[in-house]
Image 1 (tube, rainbow, N blue to C red):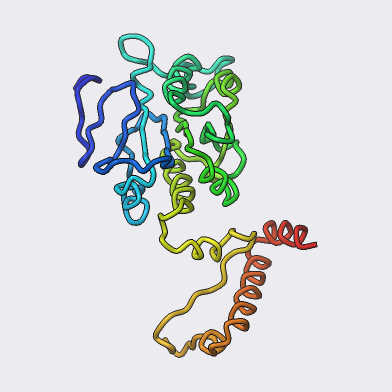
Image 2 (tube, rainbow, N blue to C red; image 1 turned 180 degrees about the horizontal axis):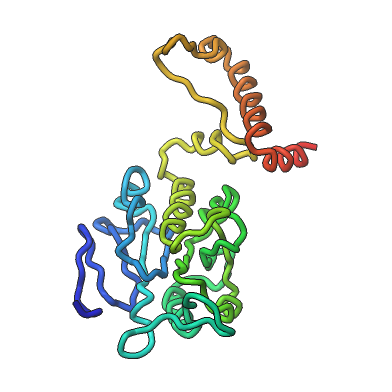
Length: 268
């Protein structure tokens, strides 16, 4: 199969087009809808889990848009090479600056220059760790461009030239940035208006106020000899709020002392 031969992936047609490919757009986009543009060697990995559940429903409704930019067509020569050996020697291959630059230029079409309005991000294990504050920042922008790395990394010059923000999903290494991109986009999309339906749910969950979330319970009232804490069935909403805050603080203090230290310093 040649690079120019269309390939099918479920409902989506993926081909070697230099233009961003919108995914799952059966309905018109809502005015001002948030957009995610993904530069990747594996466009067929999308929408993946983003096409399911609430994020998928919002995607179908046009509340946000997902666009992939296949890096391969920007490659060099007959075989569209996107990488080369690292300068100075060493194992693996590095994505070329000139190839990635062409993809960044394509992704920038129709987007604001201001990075506050449209972050441009390289998903990298050496980047600043992704957190809820970053998700909120991205959700408050008009959209985001994410470069999914492969191989040993990306030529530093293109990252410097385009003032690219480096963000890591966590302190571990993946084979590529596609899984990280889906996780980060999911975290941002669920904060968009109308996606979850109940805005209060995002205010009470883990990390929203610097704390991990309190425990949850539901019916049956007694399971395997374990009862729901009496305060939760007391009808005293103020007492429930106090209990939930105390539990959130306890769990954060025990499980994430780093978060507890940061939270305590802000409280002081």
